[in-house]
Amino acid sequence: VASVAFWRADVVIGMATGVALGTANFLAIRWVVSKFMTAKESAKAGLMVALIFKMAAMMVAVFLVMKFLPMNMFAFLIGISVFFISILVETARMSGRTRHNGNGGTA
Image (cartoon, rainbow, N blue to C red; front, side, top):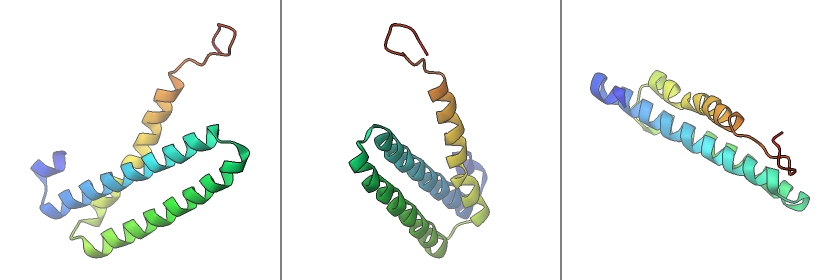
C-alpha cells in the first residue's frame, strides 16, 4: 500500500502483482492442506494432484506476469515474499488456539 504513495508505477505494479500472486498461492495451499487433513484415504490422491496443478498454475502465472507486465522485478519479489510472512502469521495464529482432547481438558 505504501508503494502507491512513494514509488513509480512499475514498482507499484510489481508490489501489487507479487502480493496478489503470493496471497492466492497461500490460500490455495491452505485450502488443499486443510482438505487433505480431513479427507478419506481415497480422496488424498486427488488432492495431491490438485496441489501439483496449483503449482503448475502458479509457475505459469509468474511467467506470464514477468513477461507481459511493465513492472519492477525487485518489487515483484518483495511483494510475492508476503507468502512467507503469511506462513509465519498463520503458524502463530494456529499455535495460539487450544486443542481439546475430548475429555474436557486441553492437549
